Length: 222
Image (cartoon, rainbow, N blue to C red):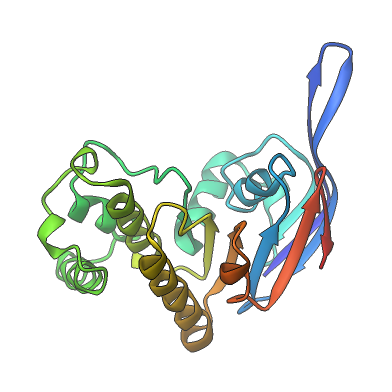
């Protein structure tokens, strides 16, 4: 599903160049559950953003579903992202002007899903995450944990082939966190959804099948 070859990202600080990612060569097969771990500043979230096609400022080759991402135009990358990827951000990234219902329905609207099917899917997710009573509220009316639940529901609403999760349980209490990880595992094992998560949690990492350790912008297996 994913092939990264010689990926590098850097920025100039005065006369010195600082590398955020260095010579990343990585394959992720369809149906894998991969965890990226490492110290703060190792490049984990940057790599996830790159894989999610949210960052185009890098060098190297990136193939997603055999599509050469490194040669695609911005609109083509955006279309490929919307059709295949669900993203759970550490800081939620919900749209403040949309209600909980509308935020969850967003990826379905991008894919031109019929309104009746949107309603059914969103209703099911609201029920599964126990946030039915929050559907007409706006993000600023929710707690951090509730916003994260909405973000996760939005990520999986469009039945993506790939879920990218950046510290997905960081703002949840332990019971909610375990429930979310069980849900990710179920998506992976029962529906074959590919998952790449960034986490500092050994417990969350144990839900995956492979760990990639990052240090100073370099990636290697544990």
